[in-house]
Image (tube, rainbow, N blue to C red; front, side, top):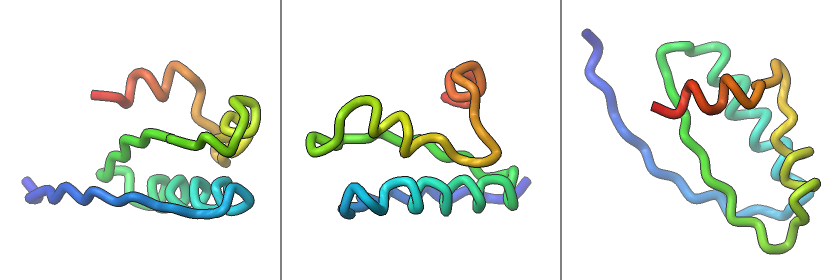
Length: 71
């Protein structure tokens, strides 16, 4: 079994770049299915619809996938 590493990162970026950063993580996730990401968003400058839109990545994650992957 491959040894795992935990990396904790905090990204402080303009709200205009949130979607691009999320898509970057999703692209990495698709290329490396053995990796697992857990994210939390603290975005007081964004509305809830803006946060939801920023999380619309391709390929999309359904709410069931988000909940199921949170292990």
